[in-house]
Length: 129
Image 1: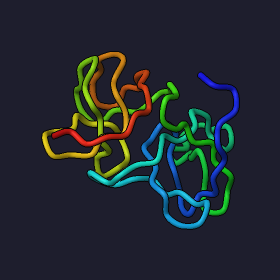
Image 2 (image 1 turned 180 degrees about the horizontal axis):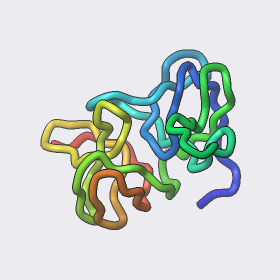
Image 3 (image 1 turned 90 degrees about the vertical axis):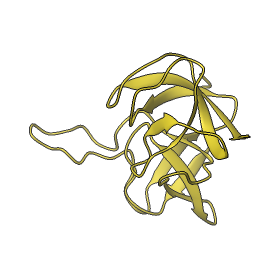
């Protein structure tokens, strides 16, 4: 993994290890189902979680966010079961799911995994014919 990632400004709450999309000038938002992505959000949270806290984000609106882009490896949280080599697209929550034919994809799985797990992926954008 590269030590220096491009920094964007978050236009809303973005969870860790999720697909993101361009939402304006130098801003990104968490991607939704099947949207064209520009990368994957940073692995670390904005602040340490407190006991019982469930909404700890990588960034909130107006915060700087590191984004892993094409050719880089990072962790991606899964929204379903995937196999190594699967082309992944975002689900409604920006989590990775297997892309079907005629879908844009934003990463390729280096390992298999199940919903809720984080796996290593290569950020790679394309169209699955």
